[in-house]
Amino acid sequence: MDVLVRRSEVDGVATPPPSKSYTHRAFLASALSRSSEVHNPLVSDDTLATLSCCRVIGAEFVRKGAFEFRGCEEIGGGYMYCANSGTTLRLFIGISSLSKEISVLDGDDSLRKRPNLELAKALKRLGAEVRGFGKYEAPVWVRGIVKGGEVEIEAKSSQYVSSLLFTLPLARGDSVLRVLEVKSRPYIEVTLHVLEESGVRVEREDMVFYLEGEQEYRLRKFFVPSDFSSASYLIAAGVLAGRVVVENMFDSKQGDRRIVDIVREMGGRVKWDRERGTIVAERSELEGVEVDAGDIPDLVPTIAVLGSVARGKTVVYNAEHLRMKEIDRIEGIYRNLRSLGVGVEKRRDGIVVFGGEIEGGCVDSFGDHRMALAFSLLGLVSKKGVLVRNAEVVSVSFPNYFDVLRSLGADVSYPSAPSEL
Image (cartoon, rainbow, N blue to C red; front, side):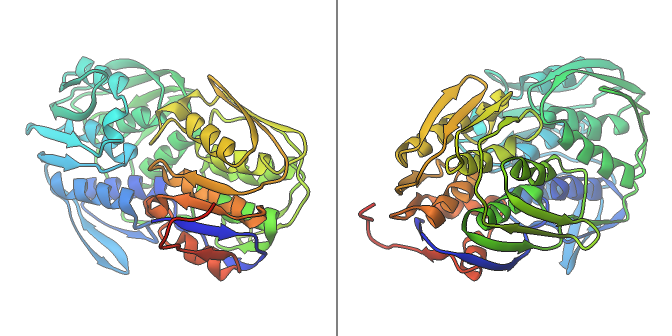
């Protein structure tokens, strides 16, 4: 599906979808608990993959407004298709190491390129059987049963750490997990929040975690907060092209809430009423900034888009882990900005964007939802409009995104013939 966004003004109220990160973790914690409810979850391609894997390990659930779970009595195994979801794959590689049955975890072509070597090595040191090719890209074969112990990991992805934090409380014996290096730390805080709500005890000293074995998950009810990654596109729309009030934006452990501060640093007019849960973003003249993206990889496409219209240059660094996402996001951002005539330089660990006027043209999602979500916004301020190729991938995290943009006044259309852009 191709989507064309033309220059237009936005003005209105919108609510972003629930947090994808919290939904994954709440679903898994519910699958491991006796009986629980998950309220306001994100239902998208990625989280449906997690629900599918929850059923494979033996959990049952029904949707009655909330998702009502009856957890698995004993963790089972089997074939798990994780689609495009790296979070699903990594979490269930860990959980599958608690089963006597063999599990095969697979995914689409994109997921089959994402490495899991450090996680596989950690689980093998703790007694699990893990087999795979190369750097343990999917498909991965796993069988337990993992035992407690001491393990160190250099985590190029925080998902490896989250996987171990979910798994080790159910292992036979106590564990010490030492994280030597990690990116995207706030996602670990999200994991710890869900574990705490589930009655799982974790003691920590910075990045050293002490976990008792043979604990019980006891999640009863969980309300998923709104997603700050998705809210970033609505905030950017307001700053670029009018005024947007973003509702249901209460504070949480999500690292991507930093978008408010980053936009303010760029000169954006953004007000956040934490008590009411509303963020108001209004059209602003922006200035380039430097951003350490070590903990906020999912915000980088939004920051790059804002930087492309800001005065001066915007530098994003400490972001080499973007090369391990659904695509190499540094390369994807670089190619899309170049196609729109924006001055840009790519670096090993980030990107430099030189702001200016946006003429318009074609961009591609390359199969990555965040490319489609972010780059569509430049159509709002372009001379000719921006055509987004393969835009259907927004269903991964923000299924009704283009409808929301339209409701705000954006000129959004779905051309059926090749565009002159």
